Image (cartoon, rainbow, N blue to C red; front, side):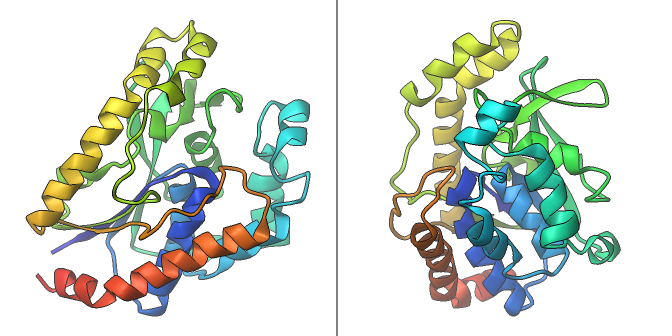
Length: 280
């Protein structure tokens, strides 16, 4: 029996996932693979490198640093999350990522990206976190407030556009048990209006534009499928038990910590059920 973690994104809303995964690391919950999207991927790599509390630490430390993310970075660089600081200086110098432990781990790590030319999701296996950092950056590059990321002559942006919650991919890969960590409460459904303003920005990429237009429908369909899979004991889902008003680029340390602690609390409340699921 093989187990896969599927991690939704959502900018700083995804710090909820860090709370869940930090508790899972403490309990030494073993998984065979991780498929992360956007912030979910950036947090998921810390599970593979066995670095609990790293994600919450650097996000609290730098959330108000103008070099990290925000309007100033967007104006200066075209990216709301500063490429050089967030993806290179932080993991290589300021809060060091354990590349060696990551590389030695037997856990397979996949990051979801959206190809602008095809409008389809691609699932890139990240064997070396340093060499493949641009795929991780692409997955979390929000359309409209990020420059297109080019890797190996392909153009990518936010993996959540084509596949926000890659449960289907995890099942297709043959994983018997799938643990899904969502970042919205069970009643949430995405509205089309959230995507309309983006479509005009990508006229040169009609398939990507189409993916944007259909995102809410596909997202909501996936949520409904997850609920059915849960009822049939095919997947185990941990999601926020309540809504915390947190933005994608949240600057309030108290709110970030509240979202993180909610993840920890929700995991602990579901822990016994998860352990039973993993014994199936």
